[in-house]
Length: 441
Image (cartoon, rainbow, N blue to C red; front, side, top):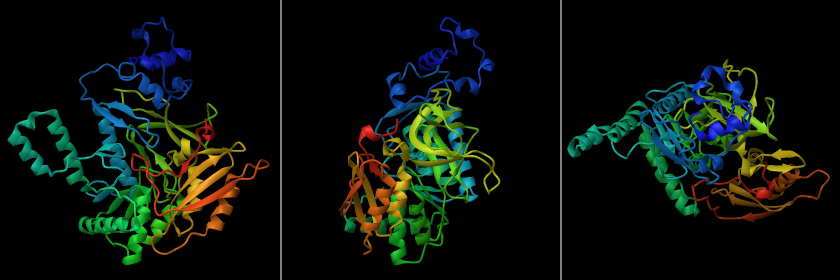
């Protein structure tokens, strides 16, 4: 009720009388059931009311401003306070524990899709060591500042608690350049010997198949975890086969932090229910477990800038029942972005389904499906670096079956074989580039 945006939303939903004194609205009178009447909200509406309309009163709780653009390119600034940052650190430890059985002391290497100081919602460290940072602060007198302490805390976490390294992204503009980059990256990995490698999914595929062509898998590496983009089952299967490692899925966003993580059952991820309420919406309503829809999340810890029923822009589903690992938390499957999901004869075709067809062929190194018209698509394919040719006819047949409109006009798919595909400005690769009129609503 301290934020104009959410006060307006509550009033519009008939939950609060506009003339009712704010001081007479006890928190006990309204729990999560109250918010079930609120419609979801997207980045655009939050951005239009930032900052005055979305921030609570500043109570000297060490607030931090963070910006994210995500795959959609819609920039959003989120303000977090100390409790939210502590929750983010706790969820990061929980993710590591569930995924690998280890948290503190695990050696981790990250390869993000762009050069930034953000890794799945966690602020990265400045490029220095703990001791060098302390010496610098003592020398220039900054050791008393809040920024010095914040940077020291991040350095301590990543250099000592997690032993984390961040490497440069891979740029696939030519086979020769990418081969050189992958050789240099593997040299760094062999030096750092990480227990866990976290990277953009496309990088994991390239690195794993490059390594498999040259040497036996690296024995020090036990787990790999994709982040920053969709990792379909067939892509992860190729990574596991090439490296001889286990894969784990983690779902998070820069503005929310780590939300869910998979155990050894691979695909479905356990939601961190203490920190997030996750719902699936379709046609303006929540859907039962198992049905596909838009992912909507309520952040239960950030009281500086409430995000209640926030549309993150992803498509997924919640699986009910207990997992084979024994945990009984809700499990989440992420199936792609909203703008990469196509409606065909009232059926949603997700980026995950499209990716599974393409990457099940080992001759495909990268791809993107572009929509030319309602029933005409162009599939751009980058063939394998190692001499394997994609089975174009098989891929076309399976894609046309997936994208067919039933009794409507036949689906046409044309092909282009390219040396590389241009990434988006944020360094990520889209699975599908659809016409806005075809997006799910």
